[in-house]
Every structure is written in structure tokens, then in C-alpha cells.
Length: 402
Image (cartoon, rainbow, N blue to C red; front, top):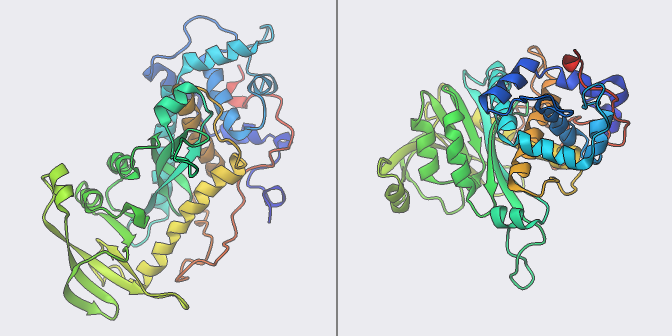
């Protein structure tokens, strides 16, 4: 079923923008502007509060020119003359990225963690950690700051600069709980390490096997109370079996690499984990490694099923790139500060979209049955964002009306 047919969001004519943004309390916007020192002091035609809504509109209606959004979302104060493009750019520059970051982080901490707690598995809030990349416009500033991969032809620079992002996601609702992004050249591991402070106690993080690094996983588990991890082992991952726990289950010991201990001398030389073996029909056996060593409290069959909920994260990235951004050039800004402003806005808008569809009693959305040992080859995507060709609303959210 297409987004147009099923529509997580109703059409814009039915007040979609109004209903989505109604969740964003005006007091939060005021607090964000005060906390970051960007509150509008003198009367402007396009004050900071309205620019926040503009950034959200840019995320939800990315195919529309920015000056058109200002007009159609009725963002200019009543009685003011029509605003020119340069004034819109200046207003965004005055706002900067910090208020959008403040809003994203405050709301994601509340919505994402509350959702994860509502949909616990055996007393643990379930999160996913994974990375993605995206393009930004090819300006000199973006190229210098974000960089990009080398071209496959001749080893030169890529056609566009690119950013790298890692997110902490409440897997069972798709809501973002935290995010970090920056230059493409920096490792996903570095961005992931910055997220660990956002991981709450009594939780489980399911991470992609690309994050296999003892210097990452050990700090995650020891950095809080009852924090756990799960990852699929690489083919060359080595361990020592301490005890056979049952069929396809082992208590194992893994060594922390010398390189990791050089970077962090507090790391132990070895640590204990549990290895769980599983096999899909027609595929070679795989091993899962986890800090969940209590086989009575956390049965192997459930661990295997739970690991594949990590695919929900892939769907989350697809929702942003395919549905919200239509796989076009994702970001419009020519400066690093503008890119950051947009990315925080996209994250906030994404959570508003998903938050608009979730209620405390609604069950977790999954692309496949929770007890399935593996996802289908082509899991059906849930409904996400409205048809981008629909007409824009002609007013700002009701919470802004005075």
C-alpha cells in the first residue's frame, strides 16, 4: 500500500501540518530560544518563533521553495509587507542550529524514551543504534567541513559533500531518542560513543555488526545500571567458550584489543558475553553476541526474534530518505550551520510525524511478526508521510495564533 493510499498523515487540506505541530508546545519553543540566546528582541516581520515553524515546514514539504513556504504557512506577522528571499535567509541565519537542536533533544528524550518504556521486552526498553549518510549541497563551506568519500573514478572527490549520522532509536515505535552527525570522514563509532550518555538504565541496545568494537560495547554496558547490548558476530570474531549453556548457547570470553585499551586504559583485558547460534533455512549459521548472560531471564528463542527487530531501524532511515526526502538531495543549505539546522529540523519533524500516529495504548509497529526468526525478503513498509504533491496548508498551527 502506498503512502498516498494509506497515509500516516492526512492530506494537508485536512489540517495535517496543524495536527502534527500541535504536539510541539509553544512554551518549548520559547524555552529553546531563551536557552540558546536567540529569542527575538525587537519586532521583526519573521521572528525567531516563526522561523522554527519554517524549518519544520522545510522538512515536511522539501519540494517547495522556502519563500513559498513562508507565504503558504502564513509565517509573516500580520500587517507586515511580503518578505523577500534574502530576509528569509537572514532570519534562518539569526536563528542558527542550536534552538532546533535544543528542541529535538528535549522532545526526543521525552517522546523516544517514553515510547521505549511503554513497549519493554522483559523489563528492558529496546533501542537500536545504526548509522547512515546523506548529501548536502556542493558549496565551498560544506565541502570543507563535511567532506565525502573518494570517487570510484580516478580516486577524486565525490560529486557531493556528505554528512554521517548515527541515531539511537526506540525500535518498536521508530521514534528517535538521540542523534549525532557531522563530517563524513569521522567514524560511526565515534558518533555512537557520544550517544551512550543518552541510553537509559534498564535497556537493551541492538546494534549493527559494523559497530563490533569492544571499545564501544564494554563502555555501553558499564556506563549505567542494567544496560545491555546485542550484536551479530562477524565471521572472524574469536572467543573462548567457558561453558555450554544448551543447544546453540555458550557462555564465552572475549578479549579487548590492545588498540582499544591504549585509547581507554580503563577497559578490562577480557569480558564475558553469551553467544547464541541460529540458522535461517538456506543460509549458513550465524552467531549473536550479547551481554544478556542469564538464559533463564532471557530465553535464546526470544533473543533471536528480538534481534531482527533491528530491521525497524532500516525502515526508519528509509522513511526519512524515501518518503520525507523522496531520495532527492536531502538538504538545501549552503553552510554547515544551515545544514545542522535542517538536520535537527528533519529529526524533529520525523518524530512529530510518528508521534502523531502513536498513542499510549497503540501496539508497536513491526515489519514482520515479533516471533518470526527472520524478516521477509521485502518487508512491507508502514504508512509514513503524506503525498508530497498535495496542496500546502494556508495557515500556521493553531498554537501560534494570538
